[in-house]
Image 1 (cartoon, one colour):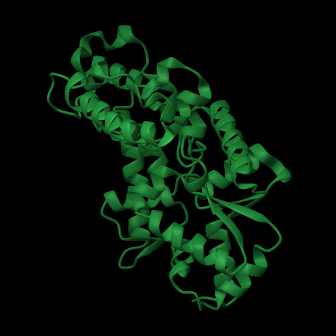
Image 2 (cartoon, rainbow, N blue to C red):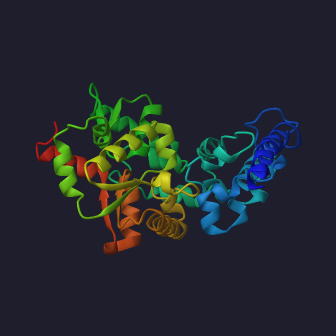
Image 3 (tube, rainbow, N blue to C red):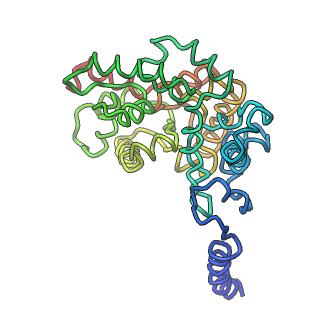
Length: 332
């Protein structure tokens, strides 16, 4: 009987999905990137959004944020009456909502673009407080809507690295500099490339360095998608396991909310929610993978994890690990 139900339910589910996608949920606007599309949606994205789930605030669901964006674009003369558009900034850029969206609306890209207008006072204040050491590549200033400061810092970095491929510690900045036309390399990227080389001599030191703990790799969906790192991450984890390193991938273990809020400017604008996101990410990772340590592919995320988890959890920044391997002469 159970087999019969399964045979019957499969085409029913397929037909239902097709009906929802092609008929009942079709909106009259025509352009799937039009924010008005969100007004014709059952909000299948809301439970995929880390900021909405963690804060429990309906004002920051992807559909609500796109609704605000649409209102500001359609009725700019009423913008001041709408108040400061803080929900537009309450997004880590992970893009999970687009994965669940029946229209494929590029929510994160549109929200980040809207921030360049710099309409939120708190974001402008945060940008003004950034030091050159905190934002050497200008990516944080760009996310906060301070385009002039961002361009100045980016140009300064490019001038210092003129004629060569510069190395960058922060994965998110790689995307920002690439969009600015700069030739960059992620300092920890060779660590992932080791996944394709089982006989690499650095595996011996790496196995010793990571021995005795069960590690989970932190990599945000935002970074993996834009840098095309999913396959490299899988190869690295697979190779590590073959070397006796207990390593798992967060995107395998956490199919729902996967961002910790520490890669970009989010933790500066919404520190309490970011701390809660990092704590909840770790709770879920520990529950699903039995991990007791974190290998973070984002230096900024590692900072947030250390701030939230303290000394109770061993946290290693992948770029620091790669520099250690380089300094020891294991790689060149």
